Length: 520
Image (tube, rainbow, N blue to C red):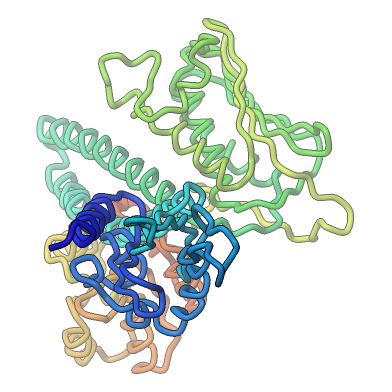
């Protein structure tokens, strides 16, 4: 083999090693552009969706069908020898653009053996590599977010099921041991432990759902004065139980554009924190105008926050006055949820505090005035807006549907203790069998949202209503928070109860159904 041939082979072998080892997209063109053999490294082969091009040479037209002619023409100047036929001096390199998404820029340089061009080595430019890396990262983030959303949708349901069953069994057990002081005390301690576990589970799932970006704000006009008044009534018993006074300062009618449910959750967390960390004095829930906006303020006379801790209190599991991690004093997740919700609603939250004197947390929202203010701006429903208590449920006929045997047994025990008559099922086939023996439509349908296969609780509601030709009131139990499901349920006039629910919540809804004789 001649020395020229040896240098030719050594040059190309070195170029192949450099190409294969490159961490950014790299391409080796062997020979002239018209009859070139092309080798890609794994990064470029993946980008072009030509995985075999990383293990063997491909012809240019095969690797880049339809565009190789343009690529070969762009490479042409590198092959000029500067002789009489082409007096222009060949460039040291050229910028080559490959048809990727986004388009990829490579810097192509000639490979010379004895002054003759034997090939071209093209490597992605820094800008091109960064753009491609950014696109890859965006795709990976989208894939990971989608996977996380699917996991959360499943986890929200599956993780809440055991807690739901335990809560129902505990309620039935508490009724059975009534009069036995020791057993009642033990049941009460078990209830406290379960409540702590439920709070932690719900908070963790809330944070994960917000981080996954699956929560969407339903922006609408919200009556702030009505919302704050209802929240004050909801939290006043908790404050009075600790000997605290909860005052409200609402100088005028106020309307903003926000999501009433999510905004209500922010203020609830702030009120709960204020009550939890205040031992004497009181709480003030106020509203004031500032710079064309509304400022919702929660004042307390609690422990206060040191100046160097004002930022870290919004971190997960950070509590200034609970080093022993006593779950009865909170979980350290309330303000972490507040921060995420404030970003989602574009409602900044700030805090001012003095150690030992108290704190003020403020939420700033836009102000609607004049023609922008509808006459019936809604407020978020509070827990105190349920129907009147004490409505007897004896003889109320209920169709109960849940595929989890533990939850179903717990529901039936609870309904039995209230004197309800019921039929139960775990799937659609059993639903038809259960209602077949009824003389008329049930007074209510109580169903889990997620059932075996592709059947949902909405399917059960539609089929049973169609069967009896009646708009039967329906209550949907769910561990999910997807807005699509909530909207679909609202179109059917269904009530929603989120797992793990307390039996008292279910009873209030059933009392409303019996009292109103219509959907909830």
